[in-house]
Image 1 (cartoon, rainbow, N blue to C red):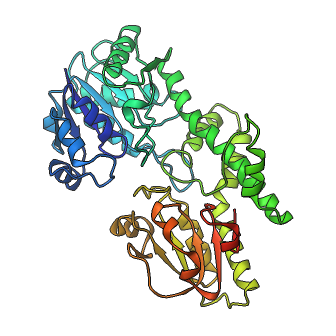
Image 2 (image 1 turned 90 degrees about the horizontal axis):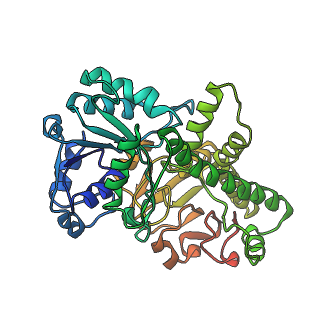
Image 3 (image 1 turned 60 degrees about the vertical axis):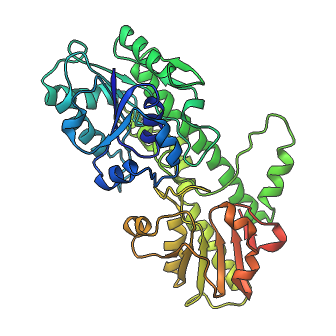
Length: 417
């Protein structure tokens, strides 16, 4: 058996490394720079160390389509983003399916891990595989779906330690796919009854979390008007054994801030307009603007002029201790402050500066802490490095501090979610 991983990002690379310890595995990515870095033992996502890459001694890397034609199992782990209208953007998935279709041979299996809406694998991907391979589905080749559950930056819940959902296009193929994942996933597997069930299970995982965070964010909006500290309320409520420990904040990243739109898109295509899911999305999408407004209010209360004020944002990645900037909602705070006439700088020791500027434009961002004092400070991400910083040392004597993450004591800041 030879396995090919299509897409070597936060999801594909760790999985390729696990398979590469046991099976001949090739990691394929269209980004030649990424391939070159991995061949040299460097993973820019920081998910794997050079030692972990070396341990996968049966793993090779290539950006050449010809190199993957000898595989018998293809696992697709490309991004599934949304477009500017918040509709699913299947472009990476379609392109990956075209690539696999050109390489398919009789008897091959294609497993998708990218988060999609129920039915996407069989309705969108399979026809592309048939078109570009000239083969027939469930006669000449087979498919499966095993949703990714990677948590970027999490060194405890790594790929082999997270139970895996599996599924296949026939009962026999479902068994084969399940056995394949069982051989590398220490936490075990759960074989779903169909591909659609597995797709639905994945998309509701993050939708559920999104709704829970939206509820806490709405509480923060209410408590802010009541003059109550949300963190203190949650700490008190958390003393009950079955209270869910969610915290308010910005909801970005490649999953939680995106996946619900895949589910709502499919729901609306069959005539149902989701209410709870979209309501939660509206709340979470508005939190960046709320944080900016609260920062401006804090500035005004301090007697500072808003127009021409200088603000420093701590953190630009979508979560702590991770270089992933995909769909980071910190940018919403930046843009909103700029609308008020505030000059914004950012400090993030984890983010790749060039990647940030490609994604979000000419943002004034540094990997080193600025020496000057600012009129306002927004603590947007809870990187471990920030815990050692005295926030008051970064602002002028009358500077305003807004703590999104509750990283500092209440007495040190002027406001927090």
